[in-house]
Amino acid sequence: MMPPDPASNHKPLIAITGATGGLGRAFAVECASRSWDLFLTDLAPAPLAILASSLETTYGISVVTHTCDLTDPSSRAQMFDRIRDESIRFWGLINVAGLDHEGPFFEQSDRQIRSILRLNIEATLGMIHELLPFRAPLTPFRIINVASLAAFYPMPVKATYAASKRFLLDFSLALREELRGLGATVTVLCPAGMPTTASCIAGIEAQGWMGQITTRDVGRVANQTLDAALAGRVIVIPGGVNRLLQILGGLAPASLVARIIFQRWTSARQKRNWISPAIPQVET
Image (cartoon, rainbow, N blue to C red; front, side, top):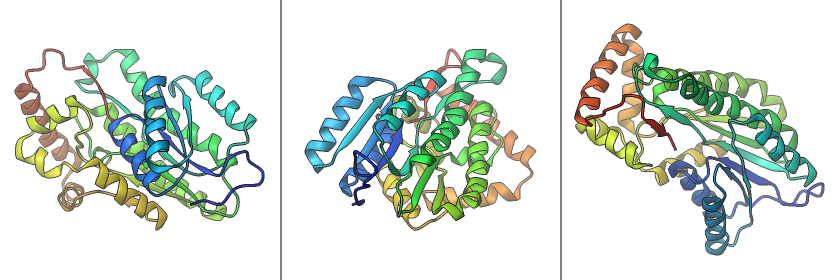
């Protein structure tokens, strides 16, 4: 449990974005089970309130919530103003919120493309940039950025999403070096499929045995990632099969990897009988 900060109205908190999604909720539960007080943010107020109440009742912790549209700069600014006004301090940040609109790039709308970039990249960087000045003194500041196994490959049908996750991977590695002198660490999580939504489960099933063997339980992923962050590890790829795939994928020419992935996604899309190739899918 973190010590109180005399300059703050709260004990130092750990912030989680996308807190009511599958992976975000798993991180929130795992943090609460470790008696860590939380700052949770997501788009809808009702699920946030329910989650916060449940965590406080079950684990006896304190939870601060703030409804925020992370793709909206003004909404983010209001949240940061509240943090400043209430002198909230943090010892950790878990950037879970992410978005994908699966389908061929040329069939996606401008709004869909921009929403991926604004949430996966702009909002993640904004959270880090604005919360760093509010880090608690005398304790390491832990940052976890949720990327994806897709960050290691060029991925047709998920081209913008995969590229945004590659950005987060490279950014996290670079930022980690910049923050060494500030007593902060950056850990980047690169999971494969996780059964967090009905759409994600359908996608996993459509990939057959490959989807099954690469899928990981969200609770275990959250537990392992938190342990890795506390130990100062840099990259977390849950599952031995996924780590092997990442290594093998790095040995093959990128153009060949892209072709193989495109063939697999084409087959999976046909099995799911998709009418529209640009159905919105929330990652978390």
